[in-house]
Image 1 (cartoon, one colour):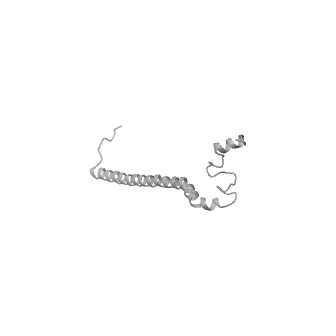
Image 2 (spheres, helix red, strand yellow; image 1 turned 90 degrees about the vertical axis):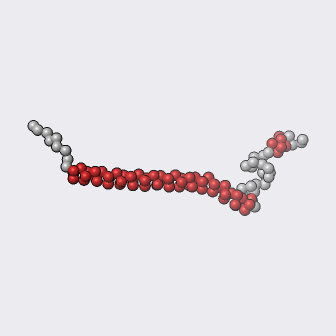
Image 3 (cartoon, rainbow, N blue to C red; image 1 turned 135 degrees about the horizontal axis):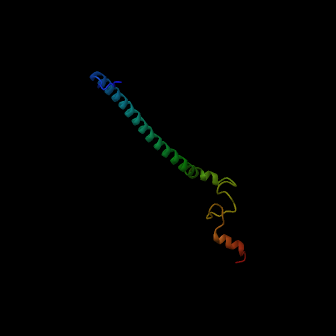
Amino acid sequence: METDTSSPSATELHNLLTENLKVANENNHILHRMQYWGRVAFWAKVLIWVVVLALPFLLYTRFAPFLNILPGGIGGSTNASSTSLFGFPSPTEFQKTIHPGS
């Protein structure tokens, strides 16, 4: 049995190199698009988290004055003093409750 050791002709080699270049260019284009959409996805996530974290604070600061005038609303409790945190009594109010005569 004789094996074929002949090299490919110049035209076959040219066709193979042309096809290889075409595949490499297509691969490069796909990688650039993936990199672009990766950046877009990163900044979209950053924007979404900024909105998720900042929106409640901004809404509260905008609507807190309106909610404070409602009876029983946020900050509208009659039992909480203006200096209490989240409606919990301050240390002086707590001491007055424990020792009412002093």
